[in-house]
Length: 274
Image (cartoon, rainbow, N blue to C red; front, side, top):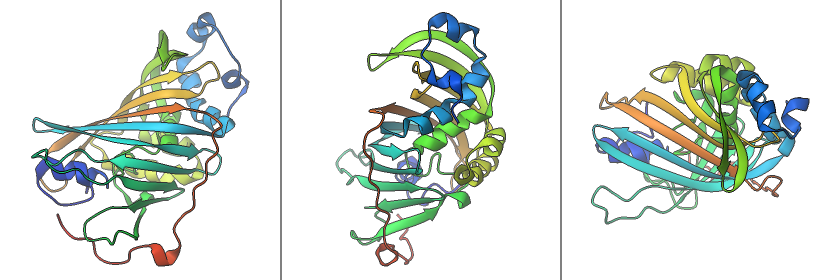
């Protein structure tokens, strides 16, 4: 897997790492109802509940670890689950020496594509880089430094096994906590059209298609928090990189406006090696 390629060891991997709802999910419920429901079926409906909600704000955190080195990439933005459009501001961690701060990278998420501004690597500051997510070996679950919120939800369509852990709270909101494992190949088969190719690519590109997760759903079946664990082999150093991706969703129904770049604003040159 090429994670925005090149650069020195893991710091580059990090910078490079940037590189339908049924009745049950719309109803409120009680802990007894949650305990009695089939967790696998509940989780299969979670992505549909987001589409029913329309939109939300999102906070993301991606922890990447290899060879004793660990970094965290954070993001914040909004997502429209009806149009499959999102906007995130992604902040890279400081350089290894701790003396340099990176400018936030603006990411636009669209069906089949990821657009990035302030990408670096020789790209002019006023230009965007466009990446076809269907060609990424991780399906843009890792490359952007933040897992696409709807792709994160659609991973749950591939849930093979799951247990209901119990009641909890996320940001003061009562939620139901589930723990399980999803299969990316199964998720790809059940996903929306735009996410089928990316999830199929991830199933092939990761060290394993099995993805452990923790999911927290509110009484309307909407994901409030989800944490996935991915693993892949870095293409250059052949090191195994462990990734823990966490997405928090809130502010459902917020207005979302995402304007994709015009063709003349997209960089067509070669990216510089770090």
